Image 1: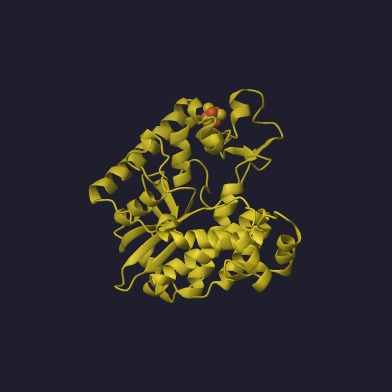
Image 2: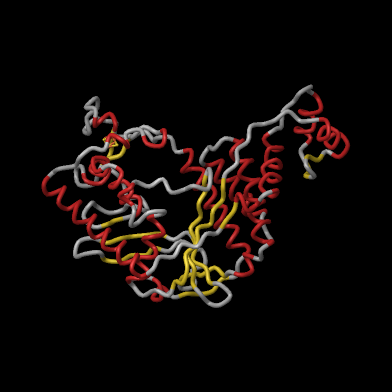
Length: 355
Ligand code: SF4
């Protein structure tokens, strides 16, 4: 199991995104535990990484299909893997704060659990793609607070310069040994997280399979078509109702609150046209990504601001709190390196996958 390059990728991404050191070291412990846990199950040996038309760095694949004359759906895969039996598997990496990860609105019954993977399944089904299963690759986060180092560990550090059996820097050694009641350093937290995850790995890592019956797939496809019709009607009639329940959903204030409260104007310098981003690229007219579906079902007014207003939609000039997104980005980058380093590649042609 080669994990050092993935750790370097994680460090570099955390630094470029300016994530704090505590987060970085906790994620390092998580990555080491992840690699060891799945290596124990021979997970990396069981899968090969499917490269598209031989482009090995092309881990991400875009799946598209036409929903109607004017709408297309678009989904990006985290990993496309081939198992021992030649079955194609889509894997989606998820970082969660706990196992219950289905915070969808009731209107998401058809697509519920995870619209992204539902859309993968739908696109595969509608295009007769040979993907046989879909897997959520769950990693539950731990970010413990530094604790005072107890006498047993102080003895270990003093005698061996190790903490929980892992070598630590002189800086950590001196910090702990030099101050009475000193707490764990960030570096030591990495080992604490690793030990906690490895003590109960089934609680923190999992691969639930998510497969829908053909009926459910068709139901999901119909629901997506219905959503595109609803959006077309709203644009035509200029009716984009507000859903105040989402103004402060999940403890976070909606970035469009000032516009809805009329304390700001969409033409002010605080707003800019929504640029082309990977998931949401294109004008309102034809692309339905999973994030757009979530946005629309959460609040049609938010969907209006983000995707419809002034043809392209608008976003705040000042970036919002992106801590969780950045942490997810760093984890995905580390996963890409880990899988590249530890799985063989097989060539799958684009014709087999893309439409
Ligand atoms: S766009 Fe929707 S969620 Fe956002 S502030 Fe307005 S009503 Fe609330």
